[in-house]
Length: 194
Image (cartoon, rainbow, N blue to C red; front, side):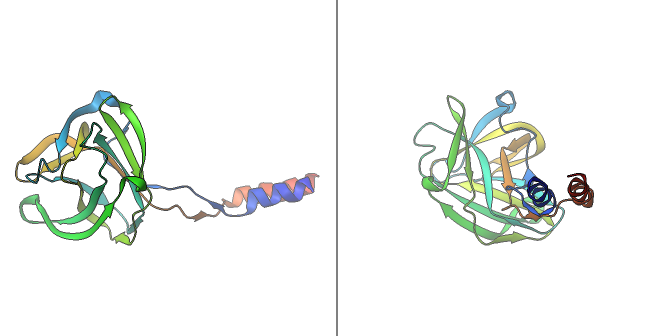
């Protein structure tokens, strides 16, 4: 009976957890890399964008983003959108937009004024390989910048902030991952050994 259970555990496909599709900086938890919370929108004046590149087609079902946490900057949900890259490397056409409420997020405190907000409630977003802009926005929101990464943070109606990246991770839903053949052979070997 043990051998049969071991065989099933080793050879059957396993479901993977959410996978990282894109990560703007190596570690969102590294508070030594925080630069400034960039206002998005500062009462309607600005919107934060940052570029990302996909090497293959991806279905994005969630994201994590580093935000300035004091009220009123967090606590109102946000709009997540994807844009093409237009002329002069500016955001072009809006390709996707979804409003998410606070209840759609879990949060992790980084420090007294910073948190990571994470959701897996993005629906209907599939993108082909290419370069895009992601935007995180509400009337009062601060998106933390980090040193490193691609350094493509843009505060619309203001400027590019060279060397600064918005702190975010895009994820997919995970998928069935078949185990490698070597593990299947190991399972068969265990059956013979028992």
